[in-house]
Length: 204
Image (cartoon, rainbow, N blue to C red; front, side, top):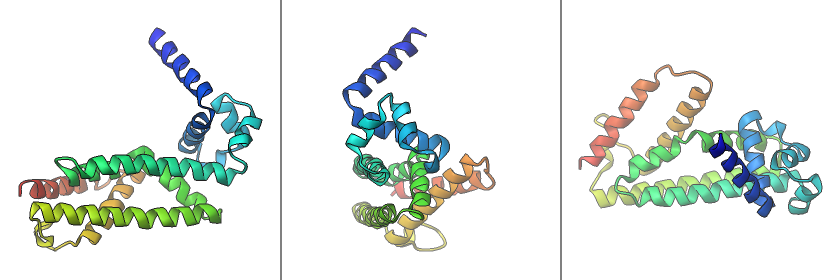
């Protein structure tokens, strides 16, 4: 109990010293727990332990707040992506990154939010195109360095870096989303297939 109390006190101290980060953290937690529609300035301020006036000091509109949350998520993703791409097993690490439940959940919430807010939609579109380009470039480089040809990625079909990047993103998003809903039909088979492909690539 003392450890939990100590951690709670430390977190509160950090939030007081960095109100902007506390606001972003609170917004993320609300989005993950109850969805983007549950986010309001009052709820965020209460969760962050701050006055509503302070929230509006940092973010004039809710769009400004959502954009800041997404941009921080994107910055964190870029850091993790760079480490994954530079690791000893880059394709495996990129796959693990795609399977992160928290980041996938937030991206899905932002995608839903984008249908109602034009500024968010433009941000999501730009980010999706950028992320796809990053994956394609990384996979192209990995395949080149490892001497892996498209025909080596599957015994049945050849996959280009673009197709592989899209497949990784689509399959990971489906698995994470369905798992959150309690659906696991075919997941074990798909994960086993992915593992076989990863081992084929790592054995070269």
